[in-house]
Image (cartoon, rainbow, N blue to C red):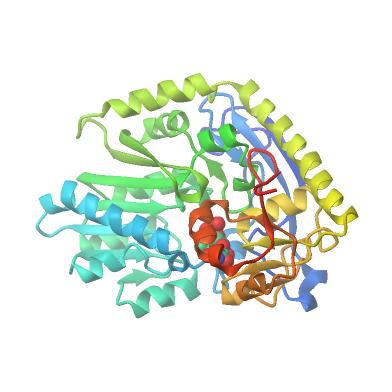
Length: 411
Ligand code: TMP
């Protein structure tokens, strides 16, 4: 990480430290027992820029440590995410792409092709940029056109030479992963057609603050954006937000629609969204300091809850070994003593251990064996999908919901 001390990554102005979550492993660093002794750790701290109000990590591990051929996150595992992306495709096609007979679209971080498969199915020119080789190979198997590189200026110039500028540049849960936001925006300026749209959606700091979702803070999420901070950062790049929309993905995200300045009318919901952020206090450091107090209270409450269950001889397990759960478990220092195991449907996570705390990860079929009393729902963002799926299994296990403060759901 090359952030200079107490300076904003985006604008280099002074920052105020907010959270200190202590020693943290890679959120997606699911690990074999034989590698425990070589596990990588860094200090997970956050700050807010006093000028542009960007919420950011103080330190982020090297990108290659996080996004490589063992990246264990496959977007297409969730049915709801599949319909989320297909609905967005229908929408953006009708509203925008249809106006360009030879449209060209780019997705930055296309994962296993969950969004771009809509383009192959409709014979639309596209390119995915995906540096994690394992997920990229799945996308390629769906005939998606892609490059397995990290985005930079050389790649951007090569792309426009070959395909021309893009009418749509899209990224879902990706821009908040890219530390060099200034390089990224320079690349967008190279890649974006004058009438093109750059649309990205990422976990939203508004939801994080409102619902105490501090588990959105982990190595990959170097930024948690707001309309206020994005508006400020875009100023230097002749780009502006012309539309925005809150979405339910990842526990609450914001979709930002950006265009070259003055090209499109700015919709009223941008102004209204900023007013809402001001009333939530996102422009005020005190709000973030209060959030830090709520995180500390969470830690105390969660440990108390799990220790009480243990004292009463109850068995507690976890549902879904999410990247987010790494922050919760390591910050609260919870290991196998309090959570016996975590079930997850991702095959490459099964048989491994959770990062840092080394809780065993097993198949989600174990959940149906009825040998647990309480189950912590780490994938609260897939709550409806998981609860619907598990409703008929007659498990006696009671759900523990985590946010804003840990609570047993059906006691
Ligand atoms: P996410 O919160 O980052 O989307 O990760 C979701 C995790 O939850 C991922 O490891 C897969 C897992 N999962 C299940 O185990 N069962 C399910 O039904 C769903 C939807 C997700």
